[in-house]
Length: 483
Image (cartoon, rainbow, N blue to C red; front, side, top):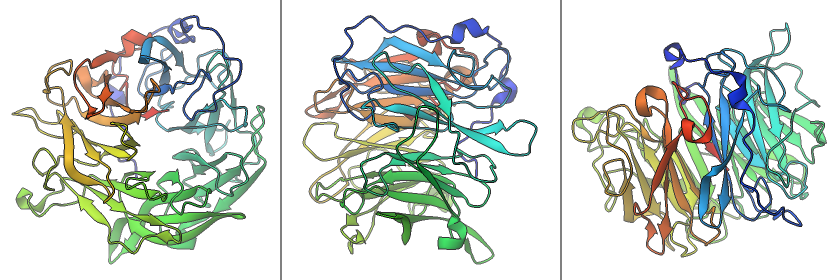
């Protein structure tokens, strides 16, 4: 399924020269004596950074070639003046810009070579391999003291057949050996490829295993999300896709547990189109939070899909005996009303927004109607607690919220992508939200600060592609966020 891919390529008409796409120098700072080892820190300065995809951006005259903007973190938070643009036209990045490459629409991060700097992984799933019928490369942009500079495509070992390799990507230590591994979806059999770390800077993995998830578990691989559900120090992998049901199919997910010898399929859990693994009740086990923007609510008119978030709690054996908890906009404490086509749960992110030690969940509903303006969009932050994820204390934000820059407009899709990240290092995760359709598909990103009371609109800022020096027209800036 391609449910999260924007189909705006026909509206792109602006071609900018490749000179705009060279990496922009960051503000001069003293290089750290050693990398921080902090997850999401590309330059090792002790602050998390943010990658922002603009997969429909015109690069070198090629529509929808795509690019990624990187904004670096500081003690004051993310600073859009410290940024760079990465595309296939950038020196040191493999490949050349081509129409419909959508560079950046699949991203994840992780320290693949074990040097203490976080690397950026881009799944360029539409890239054709030479004159063959194969497609899909995985590009690793290597972190270092100066930030993201050089890159390599994975060179091997690779699957025999590639059909949109990199359709979804996730990193984690799946075998518990201390090295970061990489999982990548492949639309051909086997559908899931596990590349064993460490990786060399030449792009070579220590090993490769293919898993036919449809045969192993009855669920194909459409989206993959990593996290430690069992609390054993090994990353587990949630495989999200479709399984046969009656005369059709339904969304379904399978938890593949990490073991010393690799991934082993376990229990099936709620299906959906986005997910995070996070310990929302602070019991030491990662909980699976699944967003299904197509799920129905009993309170919706005509029973139409408005979206839901389902929490499946983790335990030592894999899943807790506790019944999964379903949260919608009809749940007590959650702002708003469950309505047809809100798409609550379209995007998810996890982080502790108030510093209380419990992980909170940001939920995007980019099709939320505000007043008479369709598809304006909202973001709701659900609070973690000792009893788990709850509607109590939830906050909602939109461009109609006092203090949030901009004006509510139809079809902006605020909340299209969300990210809770502590860039400042104060122990509280700030909220990043995009509106990928802002200004007829140009896109923009909002930064909302956090206090001891959680995310606040006070002091929030916004910027688009022009601020970071990237192509603007129809770029879908903010389609994906990673860091």
